[in-house]
Length: 470
Image (cartoon, rainbow, N blue to C red):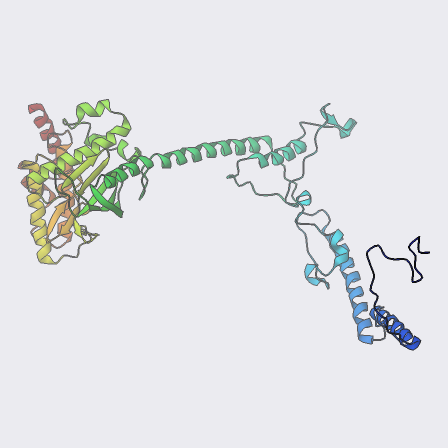
């Protein structure tokens, strides 16, 4: 026993002596009570639900719901039977007893609006004609040239039109378009696309109302970066030929810049200038250059012409804006007004009788100065091109002004005299001369006529005589 290493106490553990805890003895009754408690706890967690059919209210509600579902099913059947294949349908939805989301049994009959495969607004594909070109036999034969088949194909082809063309939807309608109608719609679609492209291109490359194209905007930015202008504030007014912006003046080395300036941006759209070439093509100062320039560069010529006309007027001490700088079709001038508020036009100014009389004699004197000292005719003089500022009248918008020896010089002078005479006579100036007297006083001529036509005829003859002498 000693040789094999076994003692009477038992085999030794290779990990050394083990320590065993003493287990306290317990009675059999305690063990049985613990097992019984576990069994009762497991049985209490198992719940078996049985409908409470003993309650009369619950039974009534279940029967009513079942009756409502059967009523709704019968209502849908009657609705389908009544409508049939009609384009207009009658709905009994308001008479249903069960709300759609509560009616789980009818989900198969309803359309899944999220599934695009069953989209009700998607047009049905027309039946295609076999390769042989016809279907049916005998009297029931239908070829690919059938009117009904072609009409449905034309309706389906309308989905290929451009997105901006509103073709509508023919939900539940069997539309058939003839070839003539479809071809007309197709041609209209193409013409609208071309027109839209032209308008988009025109907006990108032209000065629109209260807006500028990228080239003009770049010129304005360069003026600000060069320090000529501090900033450009916004649009003051718009006209047929130009857009006027207010700006804060900066500084230049060669001349002083006013604190407040205006930028007159001549529109680069050519429509307004096509009918006004008579003001510049017969002006000897620009006649040679006008014939050699392309239409877009002629617009720059208008800005240059206004600059030269303003310089003549400033030399004669006529109240008018002072030119600061000219950049292509942008003319920077002094601002007639104060604190970002432009001076009112003579039409809008509320003048008393004394101020109105003083304004009349100022305008008369300025028209004489323009004609004799500046050798110019305004050619668009009216109460809309005269401003009232600091108690006197200022002339603006002289881009169309011409010299008296122009083929239409005296004709334009007569029109200016008519506008001025009409305005001041309506304004209550008793000493205002009529158009014939005013024309003779300004021009220094002695013309007479019983009517306006006779007077204009004499004006035309005198104009031809002066041109011949020149």
